[in-house]
Amino acid sequence: MTLKQIFLSVAFTFITAFNIPAQADPSAFTSGSYQQILAANANQPFMLVVWSINCPSCLKDMELLSNIHKNRPDLKMIMLAADEPGSTEQIQQILAKNQLTDIENWAYADDHTQKLQYEIDPKWYGELPRTYFFDKAHQRTGVSGVLSKEDYDAMFAKILKF
Image (spheres, rainbow, N blue to C red):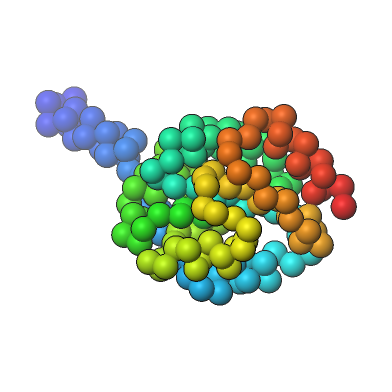
């Protein structure tokens, strides 16, 4: 093999090894999107995770959410990034790092974040992380703060048995 062939072979291997396919941007979460999510998941239990790139607790929780996603394919997980519009690149990096790009992802696309929060839950004051667990009748339980694996398992048992 010539030096040129070795170089091309190594270059090809390097390029293909690091060729990460472009990820779809999260869906734009605007007024009415919450109702759209509910309608699209009618009669189906699911979990809505509201997080932010600026929330250290949210970022710490990503590894556990990734493990849940891998180990609980029976549970639909939807991620909602509650960040300013224009944060898509950072959101995508975090989702990709935690192997969460293949699930349904949304991101705030309206500067009126309080209005969006209110549409999701009038009793929610914006603390993050915030996780909503919906049974198939869409009776929901909202929990603020970081949850343990045991907390998630208890909530899954509750929403999946209905």
